[in-house]
Length: 218
Image (cartoon, rainbow, N blue to C red; front, side, top):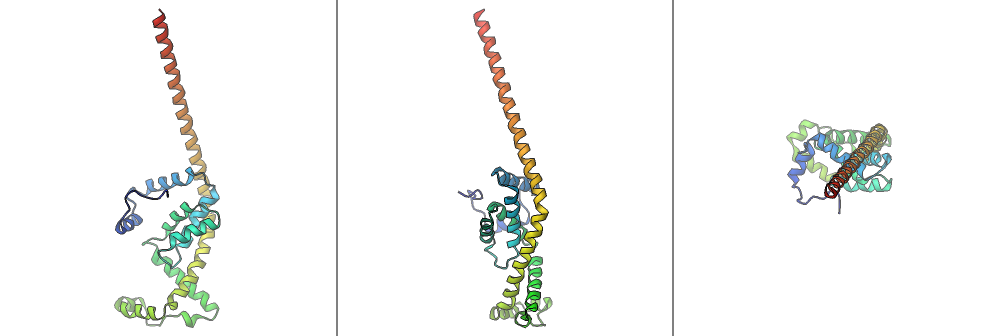
């Protein structure tokens, strides 16, 4: 059974609301996933690479497949797939517009280097104002020429995703390592505290039993 499976499935609207602002709050959300990651005993590499993989895949234009791609990439590079699933939260309604724009611009630049700029360049009149005023004409054109947008978006998305993976891995490795060590120390401290309480209770029960025995003997 998946550790992420819920007893009562969430609706699409609830998923959207949770992605924008978790009901448990960001602090509790971070603590929850911290417990999920480090309790499994995964190494710093596995957790960091998993988070980086999820974020990198979020630049892909193939929405609806990000979770599958992230989990597949994590398994391929021996990273933590639960961490990869959480890493896909980098792509959300707040960030997708910027990620798509960066991916598209990168893709068109790469296509231009190989002399394919004419193949992927959209008509000059397709400005943001035109798209907002004539969405039907814009999408009709894209349906008739899907590669005009999909090709640069795909090339740019995976290129930017690769760069994101490298940068985010380097940036997150040390903080994740510190968090992992702190979590292990905290669990060890709590285990020692519970052990001390058990020993104190045993001593108390033993002393009580001795006192009762002496009273009965007297």
